[in-house]
Length: 169
Image 1: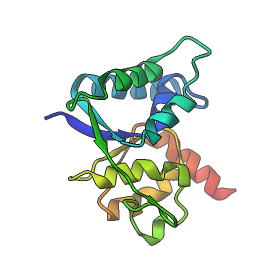
Image 2: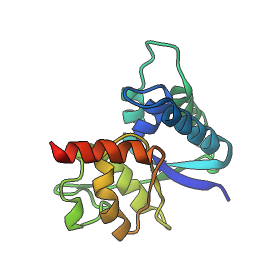
Image 3: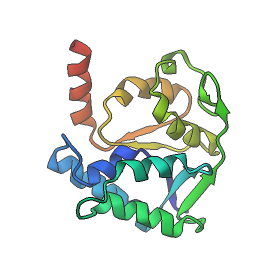
């Protein structure tokens, strides 16, 4: 069975050489995307909110890299059950989505990232979320873990350092 994951947009952007990422982080993101394409399955929402965010954040003004090619792969294989897994997430006025967990530690969770959590939570079993460079997730992962949602940090030491610096300011 193929490994299923939810992939945050910043993984694709970092694989493209995204701003502020180290060379090793970029390479780990590229490796992760190649592994998902070869042996995994990406989970997405049926309203295409994740794909829309991927499209919005990946520039086509320069030579496309692995992040952009991953998006193309998703679009080309979106009907193949072994490559893409689709779930319907339901809008909710106060939580963003009905599937987004009610947890005190998640009340300030970034509104635009709630779709990733909702998709991960909707699957049975719940899926891990692959995260690269968004340091806010360092503060949220314990609450997500309490809700049964794993966060896989590709560039953990880099974003933990960034998170600690932000906390001091």
